[in-house]
Length: 128
Image (cartoon, rainbow, N blue to C red; front, side, top):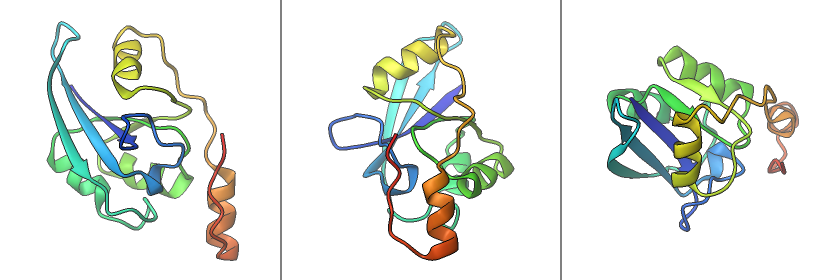
């Protein structure tokens, strides 16, 4: 299983999917151990309009553990075969370990401020 996480330079989950510096891709074995880690530089920008979903899918990603993320980006990721788990925060390695242990569930909340940004053209960044 390959898990992607939008992160900052300090490996913390970025609060806003489309503004992250990097995506870390964790290759997790059947024994729930991280075997490989790949880092992709982010193009930074709206996740629903960038090509990041296809890039991640081409890298075999099937799960996205994210903090704040808009419904448009979720739809694009889902259409690329990537399940999105929202509401994650903290150190990316710790979150992956918690996820594979079954300790993380989707928060069910999309980034409402991001949706408003699309409607009004504002540059508001979600705060969670």
